[in-house]
Image (cartoon, rainbow, N blue to C red):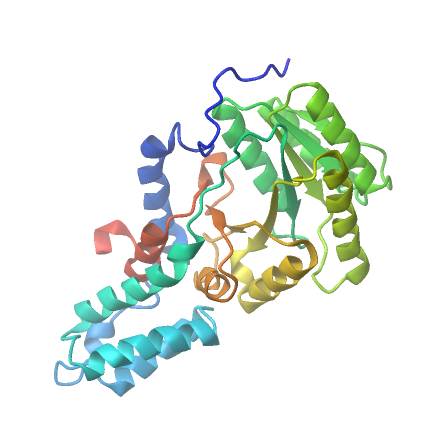
Length: 331
């Protein structure tokens, strides 16, 4: 039922086949939905110019907006510092030049994190999905399963969130919707054992991608964080390189708490990628910059809605445009 795909180009990313056709539509939606279409950082900056010149007061206003947008103190200080140097050298003549310079600074911070997920030759390629409750982890797994399957890869899901029967049911619903197999055990089973069994099943059945769901947990819950390290250790017994991706899912609306989550999960299990969800809500979008500035972890995907098509690959330039320019018809 889940036959092995014939075409295996080892270092292609899963989105390569359809990225060109889908990318334009996804980023149009991003620009419309991020901040609910409001260019929060740069709205009306031109009206604040006194005598047509950029001054310290205007930079202070921009600094305040960046902090309110959850860009974070360190990233904001770095960006405003560079902009201040340009102003002192009289390089920024008007509001348009300031916006362009701001865009460039944001891209400079985000660019090191622009590393699309590539699977190489590992089969099964194991993704261990982690995050706090409510971040959209299981929904993201469902969207990734569809994305990978549509790229010609065979996918299996492992329900290692064994604390809640509803979590297993939700994952099984996604499995049925995407026509992918789900390995599950009874509520209360050892999550590491579920991951172990799923890996062996995936290997035996020639599965390309195994996505392991885990229980949502706060980054401060030491016992549950230790459980993640156990799952990772058990997978490593079957393949010393597994899990090949440890992906954190964070809610973009959580502001600086999302940065704290990324920091602590990275310490506990060594993150290799991040997906940021719910950027279509009330989030002002700066959280992603704060995470990139401090951790420089690969940002794999961003989510802007509930639909399967609302999860897309991260692109620094497009994200900066959405953040500072708003909808395309206002750019």
